Image (tube, rainbow over all chains, first blue to last red; front, side):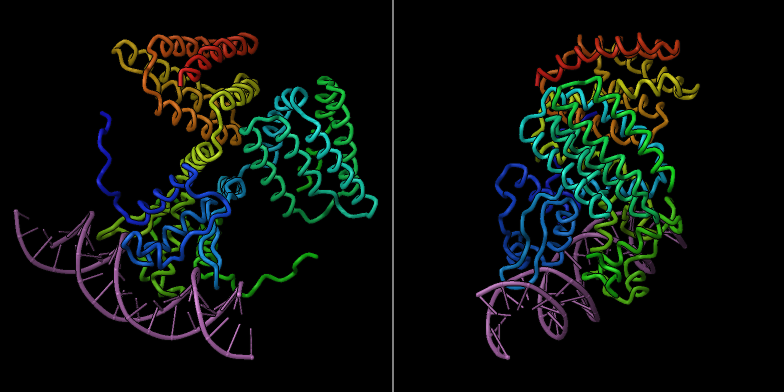
Length: 234
Length: 234
DNA sequence: TCACATTTGTCCGTATGTATC
DNA sequence: AGATACATACGGACAAATGTG
């Protein structure tokens, strides 16, 4: 039995309002960078109280569609932080369900390896350039005796972008957020391993520039071993 | 420059409160099924107004940690609908970023195929049983001349569970939500193709029971062709 | 069936904090 | 530095929903 009619009004006003605003954003009526009127005026326009608007704002804020600033010329600002929100959502699931690092590493490398097929095919000059810069910055950090961890994480996000498939971007971005979260709980930093990982990244980049799928896959497998060792040290 | 000290109090009270409650849930102090005190009492305990608590509740609700009921014996109830929330999040991204169905299908089958390695290895009797029931229900629907679409979607979610890796469960659950959302926007239902898809599912299940990886992969590729045809008809 | 108690949903008015000009 | 405009927060009130006697 399917329903044919939408209810005249959803149960709660703030749900109705946040949904309406969401669909305006989807339609492109509001775009990132646009400023919304202050709470009080939105309340007037919808003919509801400010409290109701505030609860709707909490929802939109949590979805990554708006941020809110206090003070003169403040108020709700349309933004696009939806990927960040998704990443924190993944981290929440991870804490809640107590997923093991081994599980994450397994799926992550599975997925990255199939993704690599598309990267080898579709990476353009801009992707290569960004990957080069990433490896360069990582090597500089190593020289300065600081950890290249952030760059090593970013390398995989850049790979996902080079696949030109947004699903991979979403998934890898989320998984790497979990990986970073794990690492942030680790006490000791293993510099030797970080250096090895950066070295593999450089080699993988080279194999991508050669469009050499076999080599890149086998390098990825070696990288996996290194990462497993790091994750096991948790 | 890293920060060493947390601020005594985060900027906004409702953020502080929702974060505190989140971590209590992570620690297992509150478990699904538990009932929280009514808003007014929570407000008293935190020594803030009811309005502040309501905004914190909006956040927790949106994260999938609580639902709220009105009336006597109502109030906030701890639940675990986090996967549903994640799925709707994916759908939002999908609408916002206007991802094409082709992109989804490509990544989906890439990922499902690597996942299949683990399914073949790890599927236990309970998984097989559930998959059997799923295919049976789909075939019954076809006999009754109704669409087995819901069952066909569920088949892939069951496969993910059989992989015994929670990352796959999360990812496939989310992607299939997007696929279902797509389909819900489609006008015409192609019964012939639905029937073929269910037939492939039955064959794939058989190959899993045989622990025959090669056969299951090749069946998956044929299934991909069928699904691509359906998605192209959007 | 009806009244009642409890709890969320919504409103108004007001005060305080904060960022900008 | 002071005025302005905005979000944050408080308290009290009533309406609507929902289970109970």
